[in-house]
Amino acid sequence: MDAHGSVKDKKIFSMDDALNLKKKEIDESYKQYVNPQLVNLLNLLGLNKNFIKAENTKVWDDDGRVYLDFLGAYGALNVGHNNEFIKNSIEKAMQFPNLLQIATNPITSLLAKNLASITPSGLKHTFFCNSGAEAVEGALKLAKIATGKSRIIYCEGSFHGKSMGALSVTGRDKYKKYFGPLVPLSHEIPYGDLEALKRSLASYEDVAAFIIEPIQGEGGIIIPPAGYLKKAKEVCKRHNVLFIADEVQTGFGRTGYWFACESEDVSPDILCMAKALGGGIMPIGAYISTKEVWQKAYGSMERCLLHTSTFGGNTWASAAAMATIQYIDENDLAQEAKEKGEYLLSKLQDLKNKYSLLKDVRGRGLMIGLEFNSITKNKLLNTFLKGKVPEMLQEYIGGLVAMELLNKHGIITAYTLNNPNVIRIEPPLTITYEEIDTFILALEDTLITHKNFGKLAINNFKNIFDSITRS
Image 1: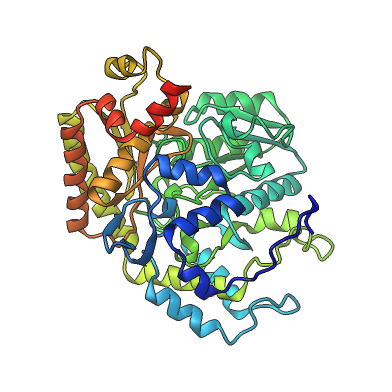
Image 2: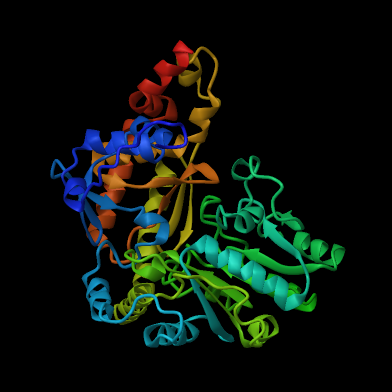
């Protein structure tokens, strides 16, 4: 019996059962046992397809339709879906114990050596975990123990994860307001504002670290002013404050560099990574620090096990990460991202100049944001909704465009969490120029067909409008 006194269904389903589920059955199981409202949201947005196959830049649904993936799992699919080189490398490691903490692991040790090679100069010691949020948690703890101080400075619009420590330094109240009190002594400043950073460091003597995304991802693909990162690092150094670069989304070639902070020749004290590190196949995260910081924190036998992770650095995940680094290096994907990104940005700028619906285009490499004009003052929508543009629609403006691109053109995108007016363009770095042109044609068709968000919203969100007008 379960906690409510009812008899539980003890039938155990197999993989074959899962593979043979129909879409309706999948959704029902998800509603019953995972997250009911997520299913409803995906259905409202028209995004809930039954995808059954994926390869490189393409995915297939159960009707045989092919889609181009320009979302790339939020930057996790730098080497594409189901990369054969990554899978083959994992197979080579399968004879080894995957989890065995009483001995050092040869694959993990060389992975750490590779990371010390490709990250900015001075970074040496790596801690392995399973996700970006965990990497941030570990980096914050490292900064505190290494400095003996507690305050963390972070930026408005930032996104560092949803676990308690990472959430405490994430710059959007929507994700924080229900979970207080969060970790204390977390102080927010505007992104890209050097004077605000200087004031904060001058005001507080207990600052352990400043954590920043070199390009804000969920904030709407926001690039700081030129030279800001380098100057911010210098300011931190003068105040004996550690500089943490969160490269979870920007890392591994995404912006045209192995890591985005290299664009200003910045070497952080601690660098967080995850997402693309696992080749889109295995979950793995990590942070890497300088020798000096590591020694101050965990440089004794008494302290070396103060922060650990059961699955961190496991054999299969490490094998996937080693193969990912090798594949990116041998195929020069960072340079590919730089050149293809420049090509794509130029095409997008042309569309921005032609269509007022597209408010802004920004990014670096193959990390690009498309910002669209707001619907809050749209006459057609206000007429349709009797003078009221509901908050829910303001929250999913980017979703309207993403839905149109998906359902009409077979292009997968999504809006950014902290700025829903923006859809992100983060395809695998293996994307071809022909596929980029296909995306540009699809976006232009959307911009031509829907001169304003009112028509786009009414075309795609009629079911939401009906529910609103009935309420």
